[in-house]
Amino acid sequence: RRKAQYAQYAQYTKIKPRVLSASTQEDSGILDETSMLVEVEKIRVLAIACGLTVGTGESLTGGMLMSLFTAVAGSSAVFHASAVTYTDAVKQIALGVRRRTLLKHTAVSAQTAAEMAAGVVAKFAVDIGVSLTGFAGPTGDRKGEVWIGLAGPHGRFVVQQHNFGDHLTRQEVRLRSCAAAIDMLHDALKDAA
Image (cartoon, rainbow, N blue to C red):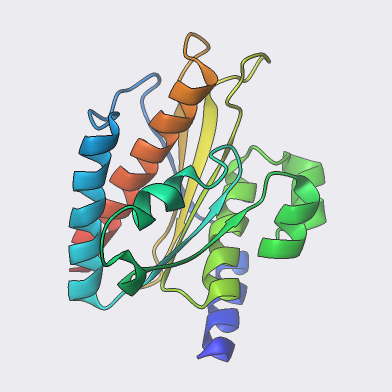
């Protein structure tokens, strides 16, 4: 199975992900923790029904997404691994993000999010890799810019851009990023079912 996962990673590095630009400053409607946990339970049930496993590679959220996933009882049947890859060096070491990608496109880009998601699938031998990279703020010209990547299942390879704006706090940007990733994963699992 490990060789198949690396072959899948190689496949992802040769194709371009479908890049979706989400509407700016949107609200997914699941920003409180209780609502997010309800959605995570739906994801857990869907993933079990499909026989799929999930891993994450997180930068700006610092493990927040996997923390939400593991707050649900029975989560270990689905949510297998996570890497917090806050620096460029760790993105390269832990998830196999190419140095040239980081130099050419920066850590906050569609290309990096795609390589992070593909790296999650390859390194952790999971069926679905979800990645988050972005600028949470509180300062900077690109504050609120977030890229979420999803690799798998069945060859699905998508990257979404979100621009949550500069009016939110750092924590609000991180929470909205997790909510958007949960929505994206839920949609992928519904399509796979």
